[in-house]
Image 1 (spheres, helix red, strand yellow):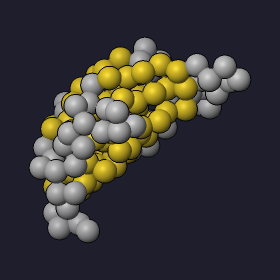
Image 2: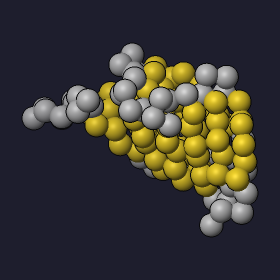
Image 3: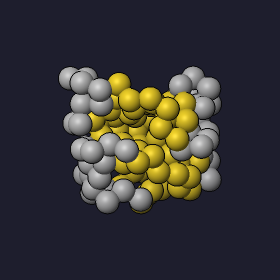
Image 4: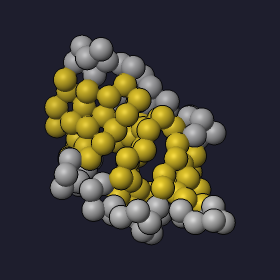
Length: 116
């Protein structure tokens, strides 16, 4: 919606910024290693993050609260994104596996191995 900007950081945090002259931000903490990727759902109600802690996390917006962790990668997770309806998520990382997730149940639906 253009009302927030998200940034990932190696300090293990995600920041949600208001795009104004004051540069106000809210810090989201939950990862135990650097965060590599952030992505908003199409409706801007959720944010998904990928981290070197081998997890993907889902955050509820605009409440800016942690929703769930998607566990299953065996190495750093480099990226994650939602499907257009935000019911599914996809993640990929240094374990060379792309994973398809059901966000509501936090269940792994499919592995796509040997991705480079």
